[in-house]
Length: 557
Image (cartoon, rainbow, N blue to C red):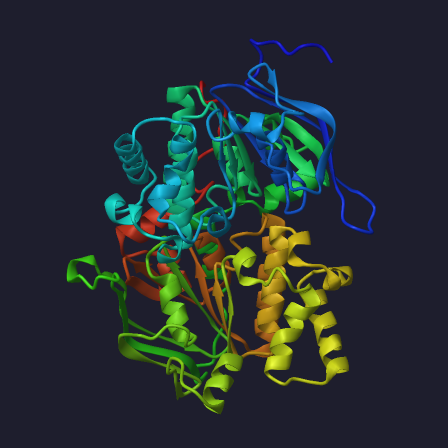
């Protein structure tokens, strides 16, 4: 290979191949001859489903492949310098300074023992940039830029005190702190509501213009890529199957896989279209359908350890609503709006300060002992937002699915094994995955395992906390179809949390919109989507990718 041209693209990926090995198994190819460029002042999007190899590509560029991963061919060149083959020590001078990295998983990306402000300043400290006071000031400025309310208070918080979306914004601030030349953004807005997603993407693309930054944007959503990228590379099974200028790829997908991604993406959704769909298809719910979930005046306030009144945060305030059997209540709101706190109260996992909750006519009492509480935990099951944190990495998929069956004493060993097979099939997971560990699965596969685990004891109410936010758009469609079918067949009642009104429009019969802990709008899905009463909901609808903008071309155009 000839020497790279110093005047060429900022990042050059030349014919890179990667394989992973596991004890007793043949090597598995993950990337096969991938090539692409990222020019300074542009955004290159890499689009593909979970497991396609797109995140592995980001790891190759940053030199952070897992120990069992190996680059078997090709080269990565940054600004004329070949990075492939550098020692870890040599890479440290590049990683975090010349290359910023925003990981997909916010909770795994932050140390639970350190305040997030300290962690966001770590790249600056590691590379000897600025004094302690200057680093603190830089982080506080960035916290404000990425949309964190009250940056000074957030600076001293630990990750468990913030929502998933807030943690993700901390990671974005950390990656931007050193003003890198290249930014690897691996699903940077997956956990964020649409308004903050727009803010973050506006911020990142603004940096492209003002600081001549190059961005490698890894995403499963072709709609996001169409709005923000100059060029797109579509990856399937470790190979680039379509690449080109964004407008060209959107106008002419060129192959069946890219066409399917386009159909499933947020580009195909608009608030108006969703509203029309809801108007045309509104399920008829019997007027006498019993109320299964009832919340009356529920409130929750969190206080800091020092108990200062002025340091308290009202997560939920006076929440009142009913959910009838066989229906779905969609709860929508920005990160930190109180959505997760509210549903944890419904499930008996967090005590309410005020108000009452009833499930199937029985009051929910936090940590009450006895058979009644055990029945509550069977009746109400949760699917969490983060499958990386909610699944035991030391257990196989089979053991994870068997645990709730054993815990609720459902069936003998043979019956439980048959039930596990049913759950794997229902959630679109190959039977061969049953004896694998979660570290061997993609993010989308892990979330499907989490959904299967929640369905295992045959609950009546399923609380879904952003259940598809980590999934690629095609698998997202499969999961939403699955949840719809299961609800119809089993008369399940859903409480469905999402920051994505596009998803809520498809699944919800009724919608409650939360903002700063308060329900600011509530009604049928058709009413909220076709005739929103508040500017806030109108803003949410307008912020959905593809809702009001055409596919994006070059930043310079």
